[in-house]
Every structure is written in C-alpha cells, then in structure tokens.
Image 1 (cartoon, rainbow, N blue to C red):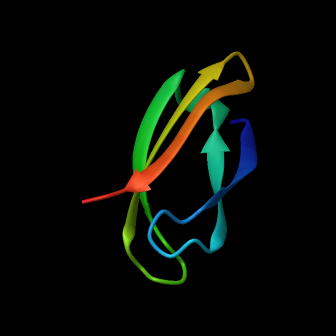
Image 2: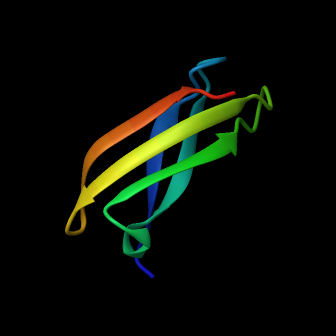
Image 3: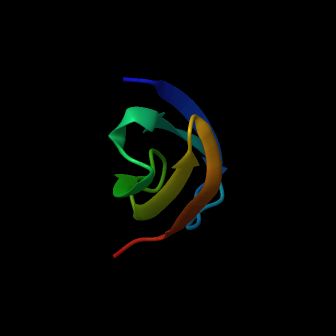
Length: 62
C-alpha cells in the first residue's frame, strides 16, 4: 500500500482538509469523505498514472 496525504478545500465550507490516497487501490478511484468541520459529504475522484496524481476532484456529495 502506497499512501499519500493530498490537501484540498471543502467544497461546502472552504476549510482546508486533506485525504489519504492509496495509490495501490487502482488507477481511477471514487469515494465519499465527510468534512471534518461541517460534516457534509464530499465526493472525491482521483486518477493516477503510476505513482503520480493526474486528476483530483472534490465536489459536493449527495
């Protein structure tokens, strides 16, 4: 397992957050993480090329 912290702002309240990315979990990943401050869901999508993040999105979740 190759993990890395990835910083991003909450799309709801704007607070700075980070998430642990597991590079060994596949080249395209999608998951939901709740904001630590406003507790609202964040839909995260990340794509890897090798060990490099080539796309990252943190959008309002449902």
